[in-house]
Length: 348
Image (tube, rainbow, N blue to C red; front, side):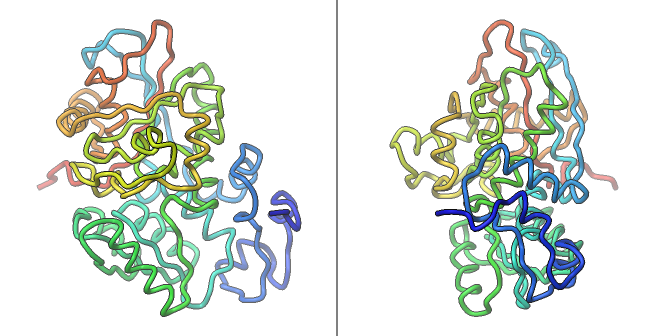
């Protein structure tokens, strides 16, 4: 599909309102917005979206830890602490990318989520003065549903699994005309999550290998589009939710099991269709880890680095601790710690 005008120029087009940001927050119905949904997910377009969302998201820090502290061989491991992002996960990037580059109807926006995407959309909507309705499955944790409510969104429980909540949200869209914000299978989401790649590249220029947890694939799809083959990208999934692993084996997205300790963040039934060609081209390896390794990684991150993360946020690190990913000599490792919407600490 040909672009009517480039994203770069569209980002700075103005209409009846002063700017894109003013237009979004005032919910102007006549405004033009960037045609982000038109075109591929590329490094150039990720850079352009980064310029739009930069003032709304945090540049999260990197913590370098000793491999020996965790019983591993090798040099330091860099942890990108994206769990410190607004709303408690990387998903704030995709949420702001979606809300700042799309026409918002009077009915507001709707999202289906295991929790983190819903919290991110609720947070972004609150900041931009947009009505948000979030559908979650029964497996969503109290920490995540409480966070969604704290941002002023309407919370609806729709079914047992993410796919059930998604179906309920689609019925809501058909009934109300609200704008759906997909958790992973949407161009704006992929572009937004891909902005994390630029930060990692700036913060850890010597990195050769990046370990990334995978659920629906929005994060790893955006990162793979950013890095292409500049670094080795390792996809890490729970054994109980091997969506990308099964898709790569089949050569296309297929249904996969959806369970395990990280089911509220890493267990859709299928990997995203938009990200799959990107992952197939640029993900170097797919690794599966058992639930006990994920829980062990959570404990290790807390014991040795005082990082309190949810199971999905510890999944990438679990690949190292469990030996499911064994780096080659000389690899410079970075691990993405991507979410911390949990209740790990009792403050009395």
